[in-house]
Length: 194
Image 1: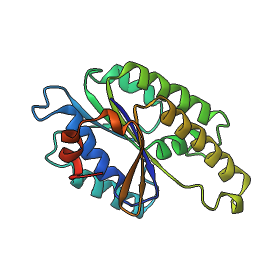
Image 2: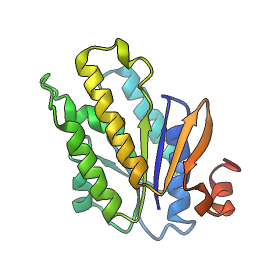
Image 3: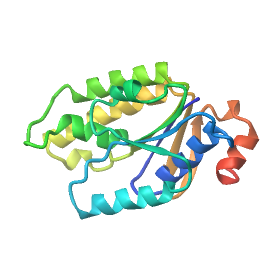
Image 4: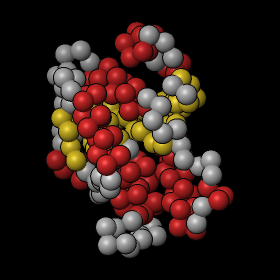
């Protein structure tokens, strides 16, 4: 199963995605369960978010894989039959697009989209988390608009190729695609109801 979750910042997407990935792996978790962390800490707020995410997945059986760039490399370092949670495509694109030395890679969006298509094709169970950050894009500088445009293209790729598409807003989760193909036991196992 391939799942894409998008929504506003800090509204429970990551916690929900943890529950979904854990449910996909099954109660016995005979297959590996990977949390692929893409965030590169740039300030104290990022460090706090990383600590909170680590705390939230503690005891859930996740193996953490730090992969700030070149997400395709997880195919070489992880068991492909496992369940993967990629958190987040937003940070992944930022890391690919903006280097630590201040450079900007113009084709980063295409690179990330192409690599995510390969992951969707090659992995059986994967959950992607993305931030919906487009509201004020008209008021941003050209580089930020290009970043948002690239993230939008990545989100469309994930939405097109994933089995399930979920939007998170104000702590609520709306299934836009694929919910009818999932049994009620699965939905109950992650949140009681969607």
